[in-house]
Length: 120
Image (cartoon, rainbow, N blue to C red; front, side, top):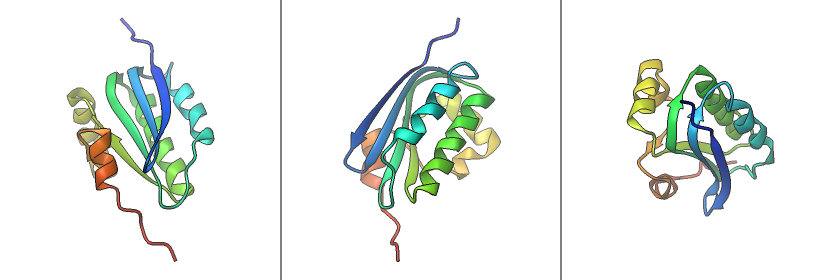
């Protein structure tokens, strides 16, 4: 049974947080992609994707996570993933995304670990 994706955007001290819950797949990925342009991303900030509630992630979900990374980096911001479920973490390891994204157990851990890159 497919679990409908819910998406919540909030602002944390270090930048935008997107909280996702449900299936991140070809049906729901466009909603995540549509949320990206409205985020307040800028140099010295970071985007955190909270995946703690994600129950399934297919290639469309991976693609939109990479699109979020590209969007953040284009704005001069960083990106981190938080609370990645074991099933999704396994997929990330298989395709090598664990080498591309900082992974943290919680959003708070991602915020605490954030160190903006010096500009200049």
